[in-house]
Amino acid sequence: MRLESVELRRIRLPLVAPFTTSFGTEAERDILLVHATTSVGEGWGECVAGASPLYSSEYVDGAQDVIRRELLPRLFAVELLGAADVAELLRPVHGHPMAKACLEMAVLDAELRARGEPLARHLGAVREAVDCGVSVGIQPSIGQLLEVVEKYLAQGYRRIKIKIEPGWDVEPVRAIRERFGSIPLQVDANTAYRTADARHLAQLDAFDLLLIEQPLPEDDVPGHARLAAMVRTPICLDESITSARAAAQAIALGACSVVNVKPGRVGGYLEARRVHDVCQAHGVPVWMGGMLETGLGRAGNVALAALPGFTLPGDTSASDRYFHRDITEPFVMHEGRLRVPAGPGLGVTVDLDLVEALTTSVERLERERSPVLQKR
Ligand code: NPG
Image 1 (cartoon, helix red, strand yellow):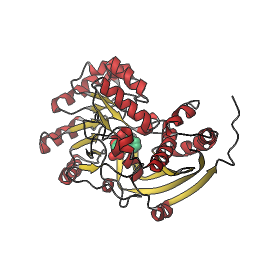
Image 2 (cartoon, helix red, strand yellow):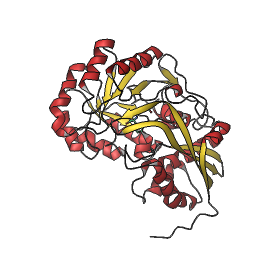
Image 3 (tube, protein in one colour):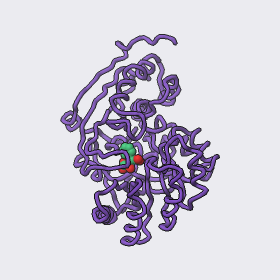
Image 4 (cartoon, rainbow, N blue to C red):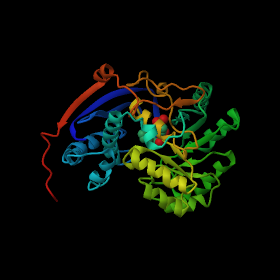
């Protein structure tokens, strides 16, 4: 196919409730949508970069800038473009996996829609529905935490994850165990601890958690290996796993026994599938992460989560956990599961009127007007 033009559309979408992690609070999403027009049809992508570079070094203005200046000209320059070529064409540009991922997503969606193939089938899915977990942000009090957890359990979520940070870890976990017993429970630190906290984190061993996610900084993979030898709770890596190679190395080092998979963090759905494959080959379970996606990103995530190595419930919650109204048909949970879209490509339809109403800016980039790439 040929990539003819791309619309970079920013929308503002309020969250139903503010979401607090160790790196900040978000009350609304500033989302970059990619609407690609190709010689075989249209495709959509969603960029998961946040408004500020707090989860990783990427942020949405930066993503749009690198897409405009560096990434799109490389895709416009080729006559015959396939989704499988995107990562290789963009490899000369270092970093920016979230910016790259949303372009690959839009090209992949267009390609699969054109040939009538659902993304799930393309990726190798083996399930028609996936188990849902839910991620609970840091709450103002233990009482409020218990109320939120109770509400999600009543809705049918099959696993609870709570965000932790120094000062909000052992006590909230203890309170949940005392109130709700042996529910599937895990914690996520988003890099908030240091190796010196190992003895403190070992107190979590008493609560039979499924895992502790990314306790240490992303570049401290050896530190996670040392920590893994000091605590019984399985260590799961998120931020550290930036590619299938990084996953293989972390596993070889003994730094993790579980891996969180996020397409945006590794540069796209195709690399995310390779992360799954590497982990599966090593007998390491994976689960699907979440970045507060709209129905577009959720469609892709649910498709990927239907692969065989995804043996733990993901942060793939129903649309109403995030938004009053989603920009696609909503993902609705039935008995703690979401159905995998079965239509071609992402298998969801964007509500164009709603997107228009939420739009804060539109930038249109065309192949015809794209700067000719200088060889460097
Ligand atoms: O349900 O999509 C969801 C949110 C899951 O906790 C979640 N995401 O660190 O994994 C994370 C966290 C996150 C959200 C990170 C937004 C960055 C941005």
